[in-house]
Image (tube, rainbow, N blue to C red):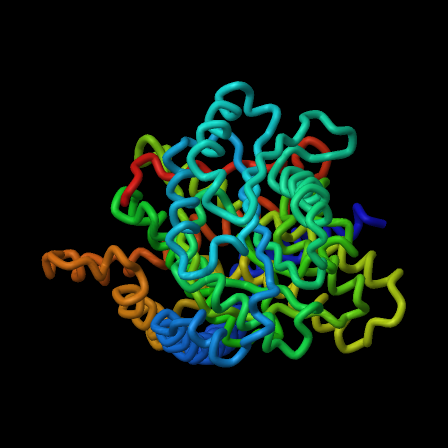
Length: 496
């Protein structure tokens, strides 16, 4: 049964694309109607999404100007002092500079450091080089926080997939035993944050996280999602890497504007009792960051949600030793993100055998998961490429019709109207990326920052739909085509 379910996303996407190609030849008028209706639907969807983007953008700037520790002292006196933060950094073959930069951001945070318990989670397969880096980092930062622990995840554990999920699960189990239980810290006062090694928290991160936790309607039944901004190495990566990073940031902002659809992504935080209850992150899959949300949704019979922090953590955009190397890495990263489609068959099976979850919740998450990956694999092809197919394949008779004459005008008009989303993103990027706000930048830098967005249609296809379609196809084929964990190369050039 699982193999059948794994074929559904790829089969649906491929059937859609093949149908549109064949129908453009045999039934071009039908395809025209479909393309126009789809472009019209996408126009309304863009307007809806970007209204959320603008609202979240203003909330982000407002949250970044707020002293959250001051608010905690004023509004949560006597409660916030009991909260502890367990911060886990899984790493594998990272440079000492990347690790130091992330830990320096913790040291610089506006939050009592004695309430931070930090875990540097290494891999045995990283060898002596990784161990030497860990020893150096322990010597430098070991006394900076309320607790500091270095763990080493053993290699070749039967049944595990080597990667971030298995490493952070090992680290969390060890930390609970040695940093939490050994000190008698109550589990319900601990928030666990798991960060990619390049993640650098903004100064008020733990302040706003603590505030949201203490004021949430269901604090122990919620994940807490920051806004990832891929800007640590913004000056040094190719334009396509910058655009993909910005797109991911803006998508997260849109999702945080509609929290009922928000799923944990990459760096995130959650209460320790729930993490323990679901058995920590899944050690057998690639997309453990989103899977942990669904593990909790199932464990608590639908009573789980993500609370948007609308506050940044800064991360690296994809880098490489050359332009082509960076493009290969970028494609692999997007394919890995798209591998989250493995959650779809998991959800169908898990929901079918988990009683007590409301029907509305079941269908909502099944549809949102399917629709998200289906659109990821097909929408860019339909919007930017397939609009010309009826005129190309429809034959001479069709090309003499009024429909054929007006097709490029109608679709072009709808796509141009939809470009309001790209234009909005271009201007917002000038305010959200620290590199764009640096003093002394010549006006030509801002002009280029705006002009680069004309590459978005190509970016959406090459680094959006194609890797998503490949990931779904690999899931359907199974066996040796399945993806393992691939570590995204971090910044080759460090910036202060």
